[in-house]
Each structure stands twice: as structure tokens, then as C-alpha cells.
Image (tube, rainbow, N blue to C red):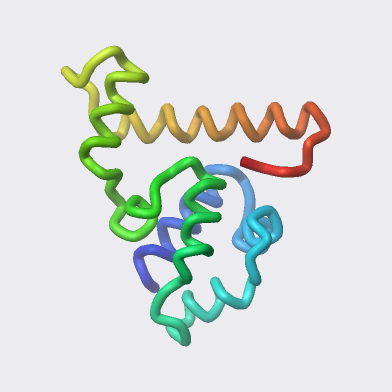
Length: 116
């Protein structure tokens, strides 16, 4: 299976949703991800990647490579922890996942069906 698809699946699991639910929430055709997973399409469109990245509050670069851009990573470390020293990428990812969870929870509590 392709690494980008695996990252998307992992992000879905971290949110407690499946790929079908992601597609509904992002208004993207389920078939586009199925074709991508099965290798019938070699890539996802830029628009689809952008919608998925925005939903999970990650960069498109992260979806494609598994890594955030270095300048973005530094900015996140400073914003979340007040600096870079002693802060691992795993710590940054955990805070990002938690922030996405809190935002989703607030949307649900406020009756807003639209996600990030």
C-alpha cells in the first residue's frame, strides 16, 4: 500500500473515523481514495490533498512525505513549547493531534457538522 494512503488512514484512526467518513467530511469522492489505494491512480489531486491536509491540520508535505516543512516545524515548536530545545517531532505531532481533537469536539458540541 502506498505511504501517503497509509498516513491518511493513520490520521483517520487517530480521529476515530474511517476513510468513507473523511471523504464525506471533506466533500471528496470516495472512489478517488479507493483508486489511489488500489494503484489505479498514482496520485491524488492537489485539491484533494489540500482538503485532507486542512481537515487534519497538517501540511500537504506531511501527507506526501511524512514530514512537516522544517520552517513550519520550528515555528510549531516555538508556538507550542516556547522554543526548540528538547522538543521532539513526536511531541509536536501529539499536540497537533490533540488540537485537532479539541476543535472537532467543539464543533460537535456546538452542533456544527462541518469539520475543520
